[in-house]
Length: 490
Image (cartoon, rainbow, N blue to C red; front, side, top):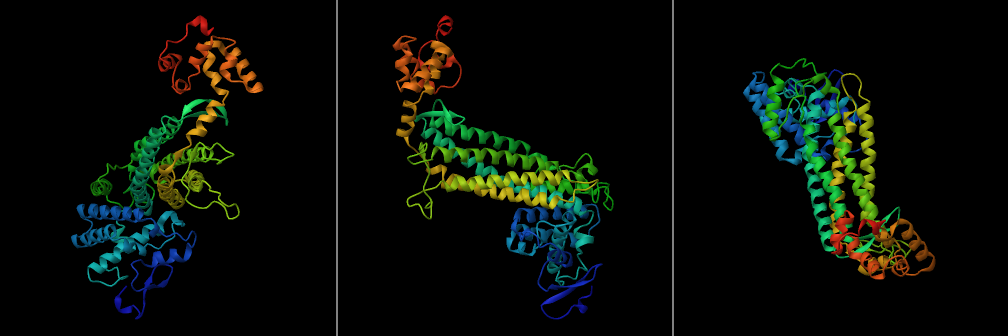
């Protein structure tokens, strides 16, 4: 519209097919964004809460402008203005305050896409010395959104945002693994009882336990890094439903090529654009990976809480750092609050994964209109998981100490060590030893001497050797003795 009709004062007037609205004069967003602000007061969480998503949109819109310029659809001055505006969004987080739409919205993300289009168009207008909201030189729809639809621009930006954000999880996970490994090394000589079904099992070292924590997370880290490339498929140019209506035939190739160059990622177009327009499988896969990590981390937190339980009436094998008084009524009580908060984050991630799965299944025909709730939950999961992993490491794992005396006492008092006698006296006799030891309180070694020479029993009950993993032959190496002959085992 002509700037001569704009009212004086703190607002400007913008119009669409529904009518006119007053927009704050200095706002970089426009009427499409303003309508979304009125319609979607849902979570209270705005797009500005996810800078990676905004930067991803800036990359997408810059790449599309470059593609449209290369194929002759945008004049150089408009391309340059759009590209420079995108660069501003990449460099200046203060501009992100103009991304005001609620992250959960109707319209399959149209309001988010238009928020980006309007901000970029107004930045471009400002760079060209033109009033905000004028759009005579750079239009949100005709220029910034040229050859695009929300249905290809939104998921492309969302995938990039997940790729960008996942690096923080990778870093936090890697550092937690390093801390757990260090604790494993530190506790390598601390022998304790292993447990299955919360019952005494066989001896192990506390170091082995912490190394196992690190190993299980290493597997998840590798799985995440192997599968992030599933997010590299960009359906730019598919437009509304994948038929590329309103897009130049050359646009998709040029846009994805430009986006790949700008982000330095090996991005590619889908083989089937119609399938890609409704599929959220890459989001679903990555959410599954985060759920897998959350399940593992939560299990580790459960173990840390159990191992530190007490201090006098529980396992009391490790001490967690005291970070806060634990009770408003019980003096001196210290609770495992850091594993507890990490547990809760993991529960949230697992629940959000179910939301993402439900929203992915609910796609109909050529579009999944529920992508906003998928993207919101996925980006939020990445954010809170990063925070939880860092908190668990710095506030808990790094400061854990071992109660060696408690660990030793549990081994010394255990009947579970009778398992080591299986190769020597067999299952039936070993069971008899265990039963008698439990009923009488007599030492396992004393009772077992009824069935085998005392020196041999003593040799097999070397606790240090019991912590060796593997076969009977490997255990023989740990004992520095050969395995028993077959007839002796029988």
